[in-house]
Length: 132
Image 1 (cartoon, rainbow, N blue to C red):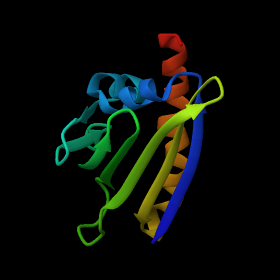
Image 2: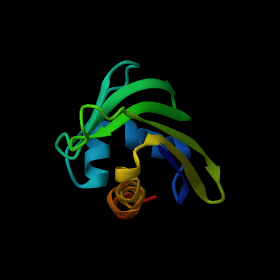
Image 3: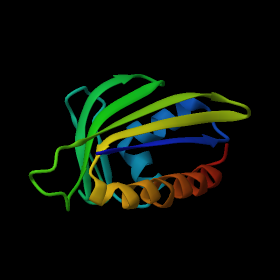
């Protein structure tokens, strides 16, 4: 099992980044696909038409999200991974620190690249379109 660690900065507040992730409509608009995110601990998460799914394990409004996370192509025998997102201030905006743990060797490279391709790049474009 492997862990991905990434830190990404954006030109908007950490609260706006948190709200973009936690609001189903904004989350979907930011990734250019469907998304559903429960604001309740124990609630579900899905994105890309169910290609990604999980449960919200913990959250600190505006600051942190902890959730289970798995791809629809994962084997039943493969355990869920754990995603921890923390949101903090950065010069001229906000930062997302990502720790994505318990990823199988066979999924590691794709997920590691996928965060930038399917999340961070589209988020940058979305936030530019929406204005700072």
